Image 1 (spheres, helix red, strand yellow):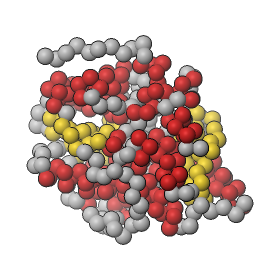
Image 2: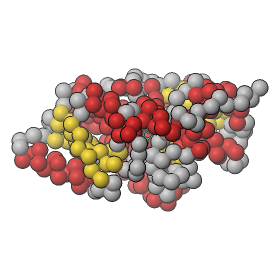
Image 3: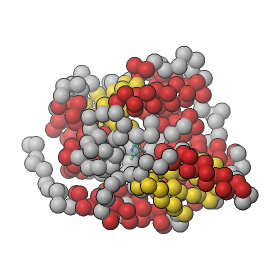
Image 4: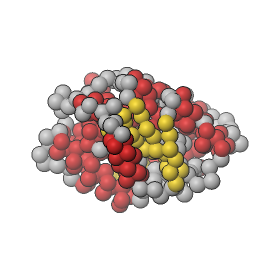
Amino acid sequence: MNLSQFPRISLAHLPTPLEAMPRLSKLLGGPKLYVKRDDCTGLASGGNKTRKLEFLMADALAQGADTVITQGAVQSNHVRQTLAAAARLELDCKILLETRVPDAPDTYNTSGNVLLDGLFGADIDYRPSGTDMDAAMEELADTLRDSGRKPYVIPGGGSNRVGALGYVDCANELTAQIADRGLPVTKIVHGTGSTGTQAGLVAGLVALNSSIDVIGVSVRADEKTQIAKVHALATETAKYIGVEDGVAESRVQVRDQYVGDGYGIPTEGMLEAVQLCAQYEGILLDPVYAGKGMAGLIGMIRNGELTEEDAVVFLHTGGSVALFAYDWFFNPKNKKLKADE
Ligand SMILES: *Cc1c(COP(=O)(O)O)cnc(C)c1O
């Protein structure tokens, strides 16, 4: 799939590595596990939003914007990466943060991504949970236009058809790595939130005629809602890149039993996933997305859905700086896991 018709600027360190996870594979039994290291995209400690921003920021510049506006949860990785990209590109950046995690301890509101946002000189406004954040961004954009500015609004998580191009490109990159190394990969698993990652991957794989399945582990919405949202954006993205036949809804798979009590609220499964990846592979996950995504992968191995017939790529979408904002959760619970040998 050739994306050269779309404006793009280089922000990410690409290609990201595709690595085996031999110790975790052995411990869990079942499929051979690999990890696609999109936590290593490089910008401001990396993550999946950087791929999307290569296309979104290029679009903003092409439209003559002098300011970008975006929004997220307090510990948004998307906001951190957008601020860093804006700094590099000499764009103003206005941020709206939704206080989405109830009763969060102090470090949640000051450490991790929030601390880094401050280093980027972020101009942040807070909104209460449940605010219509898209409407709030449009209102802010109107105010800026009235004062002669040229704002460009980036949706939460950078998830629209422009941002999703970043994951169409990742589908290209990953399938090439898989083919080069002759790996028998059957499935890709990752945490899904604002949907651009899964939608872009699915659209890209359909465009490539690849039969690899993508399973999104929801971090917020129920399965039906998330499938509908991912499918809508995957369809729109496929059309945008010229895939005439669209995307069958059956290409969009979501599991919602790993959310726990809600977005950003820790679960025991996430804790186990974070500890296992750290102690068996030396890889840091995050508490909100990759931790729950990996909890989903572990769950699907244990419930027999993923077997030794499969070879699975876990797409590591980044976010480990948020670990510091959850010290209150990890600190008393951290322990050395029992060796498998
Ligand atoms: C945003 C994010 C995701 C989810 O990606 P979407 O495209 O929003 O579905 C996963 N992991 C991390 C670390 C993220 O920051």
